[in-house]
Length: 199
Image 1 (cartoon, one colour):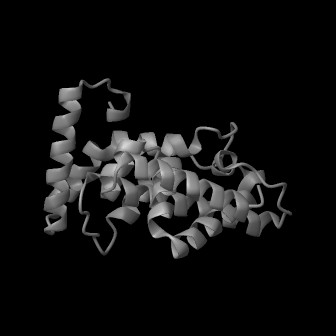
Image 2 (cartoon, rainbow, N blue to C red; image 1 turned 90 degrees about the vertical axis):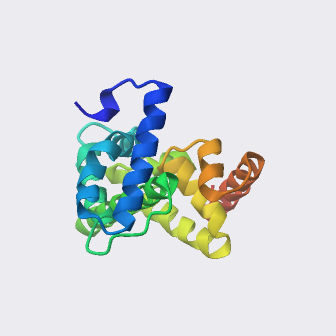
């Protein structure tokens, strides 16, 4: 049974987070056995991230949450194992990997269809990838990359909120800033993206 389907208590969740953090330290030290034990422990949260990204999909979408999790995990622990600094860092990188997979999927679709992009969508709608929205996802991806050039922290906050589904407290912990700063960063970044995306 996957962790994503199991109801866990606060205590169990804390134990799992501690175990995951310990495994990440072992992976960083080069322990391949730890990398193999990491996936079952992280699967539930990774599946939640993937489901969050694909939540608004229409039936028949060719990319499913399980496939997205597996592809992201393979990339996460590829030839060069990244030095994950914390649990939040791990899931932040996982969210970025999933975003890149969705963008690659959208690019392949557009290359095959060569369709024209539709009208601009709101930020949340652009994240809900489906075939007709492929161009919107690519536009959002480019806008986030442009924001990262101007203000990397705000781009990470947006990525963690909208791609990883993290709340303000989790973002604050991951970025080592206060919750009010997260709130301001998200507000400013959303306005910047809306202007960039023509919304």
